[in-house]
Amino acid sequence: MAAVVLAGGKGTRMKSQHHKVLHAVAGKPMLWHVLVALRAAGISVERTVVVVGDGAAEVQAAVEGLFGAGVYRFALQERQLGTGHATLQAQGAVPGDAPTVIVAYGDTPLLRPETIRGLLAQHQAAGAQVTLATGHLDDPRGYGRVIRAHGAPPHGGEVQAIVEERDASANERGLREINSGFCAFSGPWLWSRLPRVRPAPNGEIYLTALPALALAEGTGAATLVLDDVFEAVGINTRVQLAEAEAILRRRITHRLMDGGVTLQDPATCYVDAGVEVGMDSVILANTHVSGSTTVGRDCLLGPNAIIRNSTIDDRSRVTASMLDGAVLATDVSVGPFAHLRPGTRCGRGSSVGTGSELNRSVLGPGSKMQHFGYLGDATVGAGANLGAGMITCNFDGQDKHPTGVGEGAFVGSGTLLVAPVTVGREALTGAGAVVTRDVPDGAKVVGVPARQIGWRGERGAAGGPSAAVEREPGASDAAGAADTVEADA
Image 1: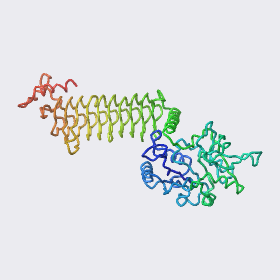
Image 2: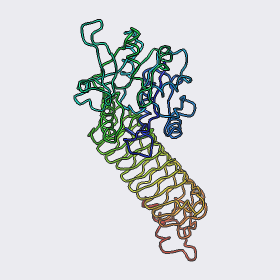
Image 3: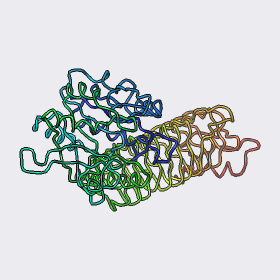
Image 4: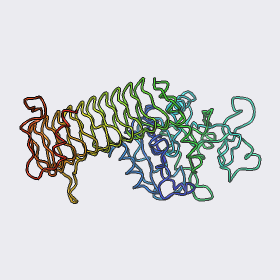
């Protein structure tokens, strides 16, 4: 089988500077939904051709950005001369051995794989040259009407023609069965008959002329009557876009719950198409999960979390925080009110608390950053503790510089780590220290700028603070007080 996806129309009713098929529904462009449905129905990407026209470069770039360059074939319709003309442009790119050709539209994001398979099954069972997906509407205004023959079988009820509303008579406009546009053809028949179709009065060539041609040849056209024809009808306005959004989101929430995910309030859990969530995870109200996000099992997301393009492993929690391009290992806790930016990785059992921000940084296993801090271009080893208000000063106005914090280090509250700098393993910085030089493993530094005053863990004879810790000339009183941080910790 092969598929031709028509995605070249201007979509003027959308009133947008962007191509219609690239408008997002449930977080993905309309065209993405159609291509994924075709693939899920068993039509390979190598045998799927996307016809582009208006905004061709934008559409092709978007498809290649989503699926990779060279995955899909493209055909260009330079002039917008109707659906039949657009389909003809794909002939050279469609594999010549395809016995069946599906024609779909890039603006039908509600199209499901099971509907595609149903159309193919009906097409094969009927032995028809053309099979149409149709449906009935109480208000069919704006759609082409299906004209059927009257009388008893074998000829009664056969499709005689598809009449566009502008060309329909008053009686024909009263018909409620519409043509969705989604259809299947015998490949050899399609490519031999389509060039014979005469242009309509407006100069365009329409696929809807083919059922009448099949009838004249004695083969006729078969139909698959859909319970909900809107599934295969194109989106043309912002109102229809919003309606499709609501339908797709309901489908997604039902799929998640059927797969063992708990949604506290499905109406306010916004999970995009393509997101994966593991069994026994819970998503609380007003949580948005989008992009290429993958969530493991037994996770808790929300309330009020925004998660994009992130990976969250089993048993992790994200509360009222934003993740964008972050990776959480198992048993990680984030939030509330934290911000993890692209390139952030949190190791197993680590914790990021209130008001903390991480950017292009690694927080090692078991490390904690519980209160109001910033890590930028930093690598933190396992088991480190980052005190409230500490920040990495990674940007000097021109360049970004790295910071390293070793395993088991204790960075005191309000410490400024002026990059490039490294705090060694098991080292300690006092409250308010401004660290401008590398701190050796196990060292204790305090002051502005920070100076080493001893070694972490040293004690005097009476068990108090280390007798070796003496203030250097000019050291502040705060530096001496900071020496008690370790004992308090």
